[in-house]
Image (cartoon, rainbow, N blue to C red; front, side, top):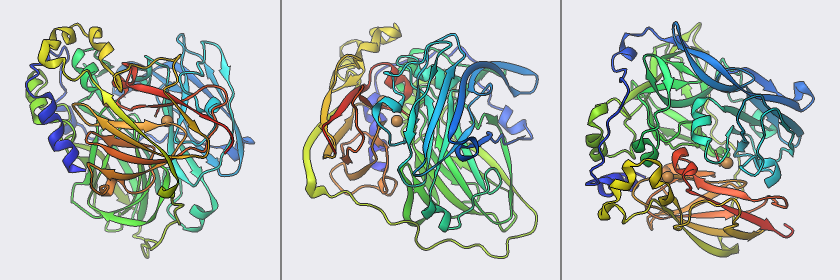
Length: 501
Ligand code: C2O
Ligand code: CU
Ligand code: CU
């Protein structure tokens, strides 16, 4: 995966002459000075304890991130982010989503395999005061998923403001493995997001640079907690990471460079735990890790600089210094109590259902377009106008159009989607499916690509093997760049599935 990015921005954005004049104060020293705040753990709603009927209310509120200062935020059933929803395989659930805000929203279940009308894309808007009640049969392996706002043109701002939460799908195969599963104790939800604060108040700068490359911030929040500090038992813990950032790609590792086990990707558990020292996570992606804290030593989960964010761009952002997208501490762990008697890592996790590449019925090509070529022709004048550049973003040169179906796929078919990204790495996401990465830049997939995904980082071409199992009788599914500013600006398309599986 390193190849895609080193070449990426360095080559693509160099020489564009983009000059940033940031109107905010970078909080360079705050992280060092602070003692740390206890990690916030979102409330857990187990669907079965509610008779499989869950209520979510999207609302505006005020949240204190730094003592004494309130920020205007949004959340579900609270002021920032939402409860974690535990859903059980083979159950049928109803989620009633009420919009108590003064603006329209839509709420998408990212990674859930459900028919298009329950998927919560821009075709299921929820007007102020209205309630949307999708009923869904949960039928997929145990996994860490998430839900978030998906109102076209407003997704970046609404998600940044706090409209996101975690979903845990549980099943028998996962239970039988005996993985750490005490929510909030040794099974930790970690929604990682980067933000910008001005005088300790959360802001969303509408600067053209953020529209162009996606919003990147200098302050990392985990479940809405800055300088997060988590107590964990002295033993094995399971970290469920969701990259809920608008644009930043994380390069996670531990401050003492300890080994951990990567056990699950977007679609659920891997076949076996993979020992790692670092792991990338692009916006929209999830990962589950097993970490051994039995030595009792305090250690931090940290991130390296955004690997897709080239040095040339850092240079252009001189006004912001090195504060954006730098290495940073994500969450500090302090192990507590008696050391665990033993720490057991299972040899095998789950058997994976493979998609048969012999069954491929079609190959389609997608280029995530940023108006490449305009740069050399004085395009920066357009860009300084901010919104003026919006027409440049699209897929295969066409910006998103709610009224246009871009692809029609036969239900049950397997296809190869070959996806390329212009100018920089883009996290490409397809609704309603989990796919395999067959190749990257003409060779085998990188480690991060292994396992089923619904979101993948793309610049040099990747080939995705996709099987379409979910019907779209009433409205289409989306496929898009998960850099939310790109998505809002038109880097999104829609496909229908037709016929019988
Ligand atoms: Cu996570 Cu279409 O989105
Ligand atoms: Cu999705
Ligand atoms: Cu993009």
